[in-house]
Amino acid sequence: MERSRQIAAIAESEEERMLLVRVCDRMERAMQRQTPAATAFLSQREQALIRMLLPDCRFFGGIDAAERKVAYWLPDYIDEEVFFSDGPIACLRASFYEANALTHRDVLGALMGAGIRRDAVGDICLHETSCDIFVLSELQRYLLNNLTEAGRQHLRLAPIALSDAKKAPQKMRELRVTVPSLRLDGVIAAAFHLSRGSAVEAIHAGKCAINSLTCLKPDRAVTEGDELSVRGCGKLRILQLGGETRKGRLALTVGIYG
Image (tube, rainbow, N blue to C red; front, side, top):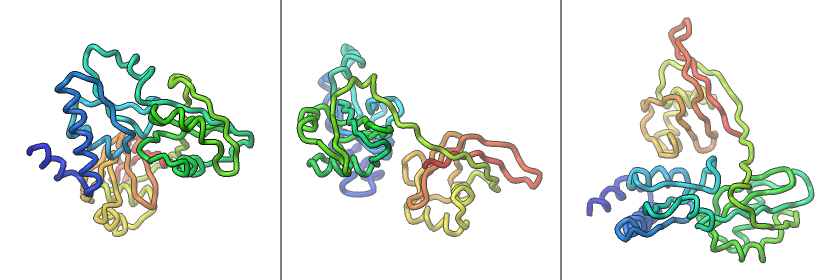
């Protein structure tokens, strides 16, 4: 009953509540039986919620820098490296001829068109003439036989070891801003060139998240290392807290993704 109340308190929708119930049931059953268990791929918000509910769970997406990850639990007698060498995650390298011809949307659309559900797909790492796609291992054979094109590009798929996968470089533009305080509304207003009123409105509408968790409090304090996202504006990381300016404001260096 206590678990049900916890989930009901943090879930924002019935779909999210049911996901959290399924994951908790599966992981707690594995812990009781001392058997390994892993979920499908989870969004960053879903991972943050699972961490709150099940602090003993760990997360992996195929590479350390992955955004979408599976939650997993292993008993002490199973080595983590051995588990993932033939475990729940596979990586497929899709090669194509024309440089920079595909987008993330092209590849994800091709996967959805092949009948693959979203939680079966992890990160999609695009490079100049190839793309590393993380999927649940159970789908590897099907995709090797059926995923033949994306956009207007013919794909040549081959399985690769997780250790050979490459994360696409993430572009980040550094920006120095000054704010009166470390309040959430002031920081996103300065970084995304919004009025203070528009920033407050976005927060109250549930469009803003700190470290993947929705925040409805404009006066919530942020700190170095936090990731902030505003739906419709973008995502940033607070890279460095500076000192006070001569006018008594706080200097921040933020990194804008994209």
